[in-house]
Amino acid sequence: MEREKNPVKRFFKILGPGLISGASDDDPSGIGTYAAAGASLGFATLWTALFTFPLQAAVQYICAKIGMVSGKGIAGIVRQHYSRKLLYPVVFGLVTANVVNAGVDIGAIAAAINIVVPISIPLLIIPIAGLILLVQIFGSYRLISSVFKWLTLALFAYIAAAFFARPDLQAVLRGTFIPTIRLDKSFLATLVALLGTTISPYLFFWQAEQEVEEEIGMGRKRLWQRVGATDKELKYVAWDVNIGMFLSNVVMYFIILTSAATLFLSGKTHIGTAAEAAQALRPLAGNASGFLLAMGLMGSGILAVPVLTSSAAYAVSETFGWTHGLDEKLRHAQKFYLAIIAATLVGMLVNFVGINPIDALFWTAVINGMVAPPLLVVIMLISNDRKVMGERVNGRWINILGWATTLVMAAAAIALIVTSL
Image 1 (cartoon, rainbow, N blue to C red):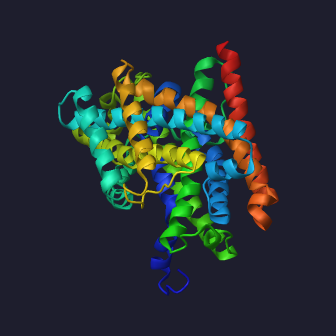
Image 2 (cartoon, one colour; image 1 turned 90 degrees about the vertical axis):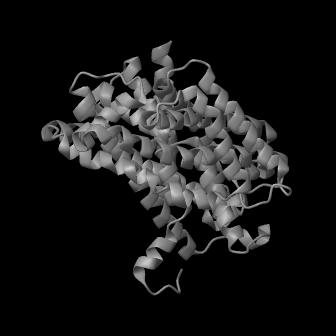
């Protein structure tokens, strides 16, 4: 990277796991949650996009640093340095949230295809899951990520659509810079969902594992070769993470804004189908709005499902000491790939229990919001443990942001539980 003279080429070489994390963070669950927030609450939750950016960037940087410095994923570190009584609940919580999320995202891909081609959604579930599994096991995630990340650019149509919808500028500014917080159940559920789908548990594990995979790709196949990180390497990963999270939050902001300016103001405060969610893009795309949303949902879903199932398989594999890695051949990492298959198939069954697809996207985000706080506590303990991190323990400001994120997520989850009871 340092040898590259062209600054533009050097910039794109910096982008890696952080950018993919940001793109997969705007998965169908995120898109559905942001659209539902805008449709049901108008501009009242716009401020969350500004609020979550520094928190999300700090957490993802901490996770990246853990992977780079230790040369291991988070589950592997917990297995080596902490009690199994901590390890098993952490991995169980992650796997549960990921499996449900992956299944719901598969359903959203089917709903997106249904917008364009009128094939029954249940008939599409099994072929989609099978295709994703085939590519994951026998192909290359790097290949599919390089292809399908371009489809996620369709989500930037929400930015243009926001201007075509001509929202009330004063209301937008008020919603952006003056936080609205209500203590009723529906608002708190939406807030927990927004936090859970933005600061997502699966991204914590994925980020750390992908930094390890990047180093293995550089030829650092043995643990002792991967341990430690230079100042320059940490600077590059900070840029990668910050850019990825910034783009993720820009998309979040404009999906809420566009949905508020179109659906909420027209009185459509509950979204029941993907086709209804697509109506937010009508001021920009007219009859092509469904096609645009379909491209965004398919691109983000096909990016996100392998991230969800793989991060679950990474955690399980590290827990039991199995050989793992997306660059490993099937014959060398059979249990790792079996874990991916199991996560995908179990998740797929979520689509056959009669839950409305858009509602399922929203409540998956709520589940993530409930699972995230205990996982964040573990991550913060690891990142401040000198046995693991050596001299690369967190500095003051990263610690403040990391613990603040943990407290905010926990407070929102507890408030929702209290109001529900």
